[in-house]
Image 1 (tube, rainbow, N blue to C red):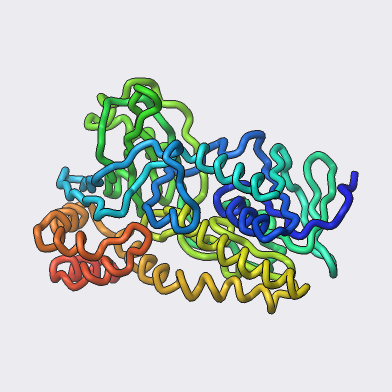
Image 2: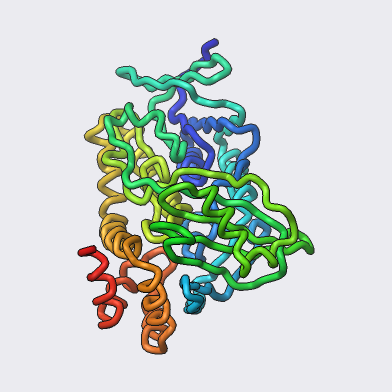
Length: 390
């Protein structure tokens, strides 16, 4: 059946990127509809949900969606060396990702937008005056513009004339009841997570302590997560049998193109994540802000051409690409380190000089200042440069 009327904007996907784009569009008085394939917003949960206070500049994180506020993170090398990275006053928070997404969806509704669940978009095509999508219920909806906020599915990227983001890594994550803990943990090494890392993030639901446990790597994420949780240093901390993890792909580089006539891609759909950590919430919200600004202007001018919407990509590239380039280079260096070199790097990071530097330069969302600063440390610089020529 046909849904009557021509909407201003259709948004495919109700993650942070899609919902925040929709929120900004609805606040501008535009007819905005979000289509989400799952029955419940935020389910299944696709990421760990760690953010800094800087996120509040875009969207206020409500206290009720915060599970934990850790004071520091332990980086643990293959040989057991530990470097503690303290929160430099950035108000780091572990979110209940489902509750965060649901709060965003509620904000969209309050602003006058529409959010439809159990509405999987199977097909989309562009006409001269509109974009049309077809759902798995046989509905067809039309809009003047389409926003791809559908994460790493990439089934509509042909509409952009774009290659898929590359490289792409693999992740697996689960939540498990565990012994109480306060500090985040990042575990590195080739046996733990080739070209990536494993993490343990403590939090509580009511009186029960839990861990979010996951891996980001190149390879079989499920198998590596199982082996990580079976380690003698980890297994005794778990209080229940682990369940099947949620697995997904993770882009660590932008898509070749994030716009075309009447279409923009935001967040993970545009390949916008932090290359070192894979964190995506802040980049998702920031790209959504740029997309909304561009679309609001384009709709007012009745010009949804690729030339007009290229302003969106220009905006995010000016803000994010210097950071992404530096972080990608650094990530490529780290991916080549041997376990022995990881031991040496973590020992360097634990030294007083580097700890002082990290406290001055580290920013949760902006890694390049601290990367460029630690590269001036002789031991770290030589270690990373050698890895590039391996």
